[in-house]
Length: 299
Image (cartoon, rainbow, N blue to C red):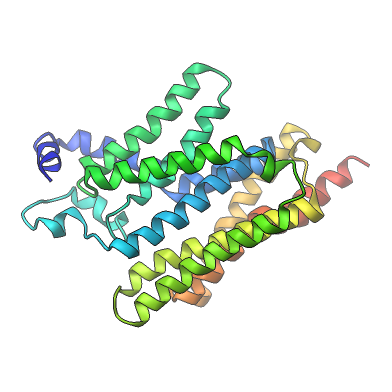
């Protein structure tokens, strides 16, 4: 906590705004559009690297959160005050940091995939700054950030090294999909058991179940695309890909909002929502729009 007290003394209104902008890089509103951009328009295989890195590390971090159940810094020390506007996005327990996990699992692969040293360094700087911003804003301790970053780096590095198993080889398609589904189901069941016996509140179980729904959706969507769709993002012109990208984002957002309005914020509704959203991105939208549109234009 002493480091957080030190950072609190350095806060200024301008720096608060800057750090909130940096911490935004660790939210799903950045991750999802980037995965969509690569998957629908640029490089499907790299999108899979991003997806496997993000969803597997996300499931691990959410499981650790409800296992250790470490409160936020302002709960550990009631005299400490975070930047007030950042508290709304600080859902779940404190350890490990979810924003740091999301940023690291996104920007580490981007640094490895970068075409020049500058973009690689900027990508590394991005996830380091997100981790720092979480401490500056008072949402996480150094332990929360460092453990999350280390775990995410290890997972992302392993996925980068063995990416051929996800992008080229067809030998392990079913086992990989089943393992990811199994891990996601375990995370959801574990969270629901803890919620059911009163160990954790609903809001903590909800974060785990969202991650589980997304993980299952990713596993199913990845398997269906690899076995049935065989999407080629570069089979149409750049202008058509741009149209498909913005159309897809708009439809994805509309689907998310519609689902929330119709079914509310129950745990089951959120599992289904994130499952359908990720399945939509990976399989349903490419099949209904991208694949048929590009096939028709190439006849």
